[in-house]
Amino acid sequence: MWHLRGPPDLRGRGYRRPVRVQADHQLPVRLELRHPAQWLQRPGHQLWDRHVRYRRQSRLWGHDGQRLWLHTQPDVDDLLWKVRQRHRQLWDPQMCARMGRVCGAVTAADNCGFSRTVASCGTCAAPKTCSASGACGCVDETDSQFCARLHATCGSVTATNNCAATHTATCTPGCAANQVCEGPTGPAPNTCCTPLTACTGGRVCGTMPDNCGGTINCGTLAGKCPGVGQVCSAAGTCSCPGGATELCNNGVDDNCDGLADCADPQCTGGGYQCAALPPSGWLGPVSFWNGPNGTAPPACPTNFQTPTPYLTGLSFNPAVCTCGCVVGGTTICSGGDAVKFIGGNDCGEITPPQTVGTACTQVSIPLSQFGHFPVSGVGLQNASGTACSNVGTAAGGGAPTISTKGQLCNWGLQLDHAGCSATQQCVAGIPTNQLLCVYQAGTVATCPAGYNTSGPFSYFTGTTDDRRCPACACTTDTPQSASCNTNFTVFQHADCTGASEFFNTSPASCVSTGFNGLNFTPDAPASAAITGTTVFDGLCTTTNANPPGTGAVNPTGQITICCR
Image (cartoon, rainbow, N blue to C red; front, side):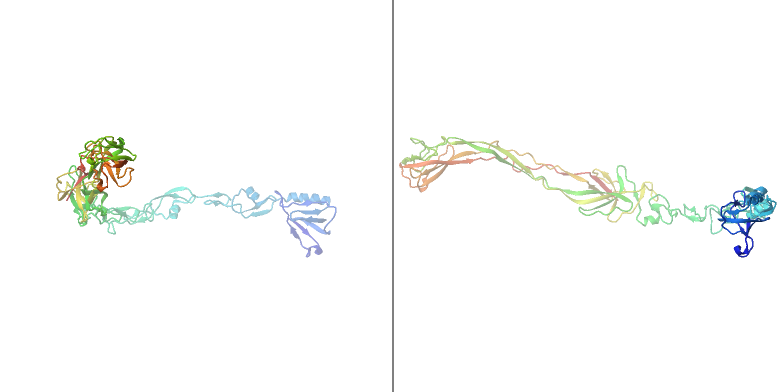
């Protein structure tokens, strides 16, 4: 610490005012001397330290809060350097280290010979404490202190002591004859406790705490609970695992009344019943419903599942068959293209024969032939090129009809004899619109014992239609009476004018003219001409126009159902 004393006109009151400057690592004060070329402060200041007052005049050059500049004579500079070296003091940590202390306060002479106090050389981490010598350490507590701190009055205790080490001690004074030392699980471990000697709270079985960290045995259920199957509950009372309700389908006495499934009134009151086991070759039991086809079936009863539809009441009409024969192809006319008038009244030959073609031809009708106009087959056309083809239809009798629909639902649970005989099983009740049944694939005439009250019922899953018609046949291969007839007209006058009559000839025919009252003059010239051909395809006939059908509509997937 350095001091400056100034005159009253500079300092105001003329007393010593300390000016502190920053020290380096070893010195609490660093004094720097300078020899400036100019003075910035007035003269008259004196330099002081803690013990020596230097009365020699010096000039203050300046300071910046960390350094102090003084201008002195060289001999003063030397003196100040010596003073500075003599009063170099230690820091507090250095002072504590010099005294060998790591904690607490210390008062001693420092390196300059002055008495000095360090308020604290440090602290100790718990559980250690600072000793009088300034060292950190821990003193183990005694067994009594250890037990007292843990509130233990009996038994052996192992825990962490005050110095964070594991410690084991036997705590005193111990317990009276009717007491026990509570264990580690008791409400107050290692303290004396009077245990219970009998179970409380209505407990009749199991164990319960004795209030001292131990347990007391309350006995077994033998002879203490009604019914069968009771177990000891967590509260030490009789308890039925299945509760108060019988499940009716698991072979177990769930409500512990000594009656299982079909023997329990809870089950029989709900419709459960003992039914005969399905005989060999039969399946079931199943619930069976039937009704008019088109009616929606009901849901399966409780514990029945997988509804399967079936049908019955099949009816159908036989096949309706028809046969016929038709002319096939095109009639081709071939042969002559002229007509000869060659006959008399008896279609006998006249002389000379008169031939008529497609052109207008003059003809003479002898008086002896008047009234007939016979035509011979000479030069007439022939018909060919057609054949008979058979045709047939099979109406089939229409779609079959099914009057009744059925539904089977399979029993969905395990085989359960509880409450029934060895040849029976306990099954759920069936609604009044259904039956309890067994079934077998195919058609069976007789129902088995136990399921012979209703049935047998024959049902199926589908149908096949085998209705057929026989093949149709024609009587002949070619049409009958097919012909190509020549059409010609006879005119009153020789130039194919006047009154006329149309004739259609067929081969080897004799046409009676009669002339229909025409004013023909016997032996007088007349005329005629071919005017076309009339084609007749002929007729085809069948051997059987309406043959009987064969076959039927047959059910598939048939089963037989028999019910109780």
